[in-house]
Image (cartoon, rainbow, N blue to C red):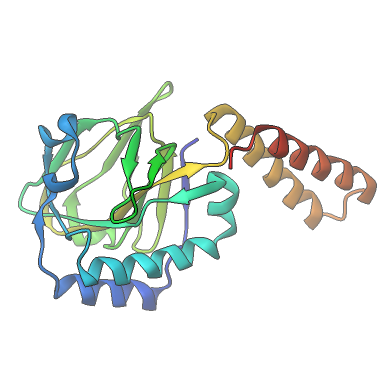
Length: 226
């Protein structure tokens, strides 16, 4: 499932992120790339342990916890601490697939990567290029969203970031271990939850809604890994 989630951050939160990022020190983005990614990754990144990265990461994690669309789509069990990247001057990230497992810094805990996420922190008119291109069985999908908006997509997807030829592309990126490992099951549950919410808004038969909601939770109970 590839899904755009609007307004994860408010205008004020984006403005704060930009101020912190403008004052931050950046390093070579290959510092967190795996073997495959390091050969095609050309960008800048905040150090994972920097105060700026921790501050903005906590802000984003708080926003995600309050976002019902994200919760419904990803059904998160764990979220990797958000990272931050910068593309300018022709920088890009070639074709790659995200690592299946990552070690969460300073914890010793590992996270299985089921869902990938990019939260845009610069508006599309601030830069040229920089599209996130995601491939699936239906073709190639392009994402270049307003600041504060986010896209989530299966971590199994082949994807890339095209060269930024003008301006600067700023974003946060991170990964999610879902309670539902199987992408098809996760999509089915998201579709059911969306339908339930719409039916609740239309005054549908209450007994039927209770039955459908019960079926959703019973499937979640059957498939969830905690």
